[in-house]
Image (cartoon, rainbow, N blue to C red; front, side, top):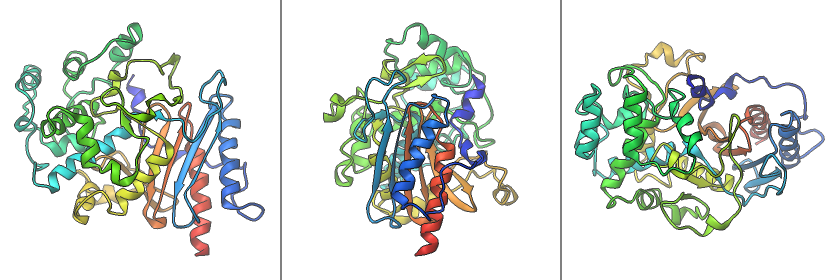
Length: 386
């Protein structure tokens, strides 16, 4: 299961960009090229990808581009539409991080506060019983995966195997925290190293709930300005009623498992849980970097800060990308910074500051690296033409 960590890591940086669809824009418009790239994504997947949707929100285009191709499932029973929502899995972490940083800029909390200030006593007892000191684990450590906490979700096979035996079980956050203590060993002292960790993010979800009478959905909706941003197809599954719940969803897979009907609680309380569409994802990320979510520009700067243990030489080494900002990765592709997050089910959300452009992609299985890199080549040409 340790290898599954890399499913969550931005591997598309290392992907090759082989010959296929021509991205030179000599014989086709950008929009036509994007459509061809969606088809190529499926054709080159050896039938692994049955459907793909993509949204691009960019000043380089006359309007937001949003299109889908293929089917919602491997059986190819229903054609995929841009309106079909999907579980975004770990991309939820970006939303949770933004909500925590909104509370920080509102002076409701400080990311240098220890988690012990906000967590209920039963959670603190679970942590202490396994050798953790909650007074030493700061909120910022959970934000950038330097808490040293073991990850209940992906550190071992135990969690997935338990779910597969009883996929309809309704999990609680407390049970997941207990699982982390039972299934995994402590990884490090707080602030020492980056190790991707869902456990820290479910604790961040619990902290948000402290300010919203135990209602994480209400907290995210309010702090992230869902209504004013027009995010009509984004909601926290099973924790709130939403009009889009009745829409047919894109199916989800994990290895040999068809996970579409697994209970939402397996990935719900902060590390995952949101359902969305490619259009809403691209709109949210664009709004975030256009400073339409935070009240203060300095909060976005804080979000993009790197762990304190990372040296200047590491930052200048393009091969050393094993660190995480507050709620997202920052990597380089074709020489440009790219802020991004992806999810284990097959979705990716990214923003390229040089182009002021956000892109979201969702596939029925995780295989969009080549597609994203070729889209970036098209955007590079459009930028040069400005």
